[in-house]
Amino acid sequence: SLSAAGDKRLESARKNLIRMVTHELRTPLVSIDMVQDVISRRGDQLTQSQLDEYLDILRSGTKRLKHVIEQMVFITQLESDALSSDAIYAEGFEYQIWEILTSAVNLGRGFAYRNRDLPINVDARDRDVVVLCFMDAMRHAFAELISNALNFSPEDSAVVISQWESDDTVWINIQDSGPGIPQEHIELVQQDYHQANRESQEQQGMGLGLSLARRLIEAHGGELELSSIEGKGTQILVKLPTLDVS
Image (cartoon, rainbow, N blue to C red):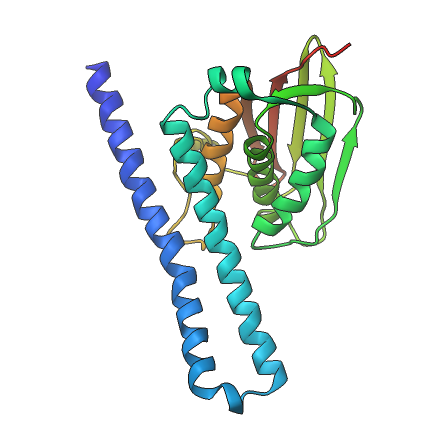
């Protein structure tokens, strides 16, 4: 039956989530533990450059942990309806989409594990467009999408974000020129907490980030559409209802 199939998919998504979160938490913890161990045993023998290298490992491990914890917080809020369309309507604040995108770019660079310094070109045609939202949640959603675009981009390319308004809707398009996603994987990567080629590629994020971004955007009354051409890149189009503040 349909309901049994739905329950099975949900159970599979939950197992996937637990497996992924366990991996995402353990991996940085291993490197943090190792660095602490080395510094406590050999701290006085380390050169400045060795110390700097170990501090970099600590910083990136801590950043990765913080990212996963943030994801867990938002998933918990979504599951408990603390972050729902009703809650946003009752308690949300008005923000310009331009302001959200600008801070999401910085956060997305922090989430990315590749190409953090790649150019990100933002073409905002309608800067004054206002949406009703929970700022932290909306910024996090766009940061996840931006970090995915950076992670999968070639090193000599740029990520392009364009934004425009039409008929009480604001459209935000995020485009990369990465390897693209094979057609048979498009539906798969959009399922909750799935990663394409997780085993063959060390991917921090792609499944968790994309499905979380979609859920956060849908809670705000929006939609997320992913399209991809192999060898050409991936495009994510987000639409959100605007607020008339005139």
